[in-house]
Amino acid sequence: MRMDIATVNALPYEDFVNIFGNVVEKCPIVTAAVWSARPFLNFAALEGAIRDFIDALPESGKEGILRCHPDLAGRDLQSGTLTQESREEQAGAGMDALSSAEASSMTRLNADYKARFGFPFVVCARMSDKANILRQLAERCKNERAVERARGIEEVKKICHLRLLGLVLTDAPNKL
Ligand code: 2AL
Image (cartoon, rainbow, N blue to C red; front, side, top):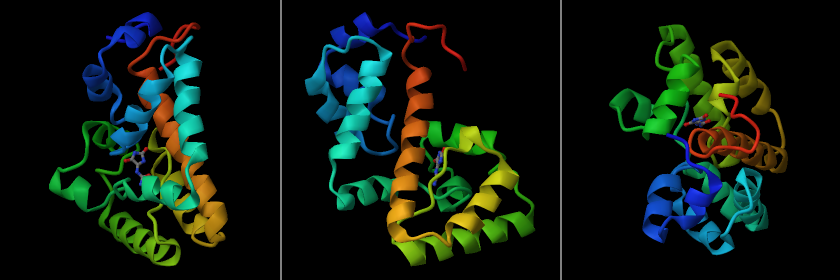
């Protein structure tokens, strides 16, 4: 059940990190840091504190956040070791139901991308679909490193937004 912001603000630290620790994939340090910014006025303030923390990181820290993300249709999906959030997002975009040709394209392009930039391709899967993800992956491989670093971080923020919407009530009715 989604909680209201007063309930969020009343959570002990351990509960806060248990509940929100994966709004940025495998980066509970973000949640732990944002704890200091309580109380949050509303959903937007909580989200804004997370965004501000990410934006204040040096470029190496932003790349670190990108590196915490599992590949789309990658080894973790195959071996069942994705986080629950990531599993649902990837399944929603059809990443668990690729044809063998699509799967080998994804593997090759993900590897090309990582070799070029040193961090994985990240996209908000819930705002996309299989065809679009494959197209974006091929296109974004051609960008400059700094462009892709910034683009990946924007995608992390979209993923975070949707994960937060699943946990916290907004002032306006939640659209999900
Ligand atoms: C992911 C993921 O796990 N969920 C999502 O929306 N995107 N990973 C990725 N490499 O883009």
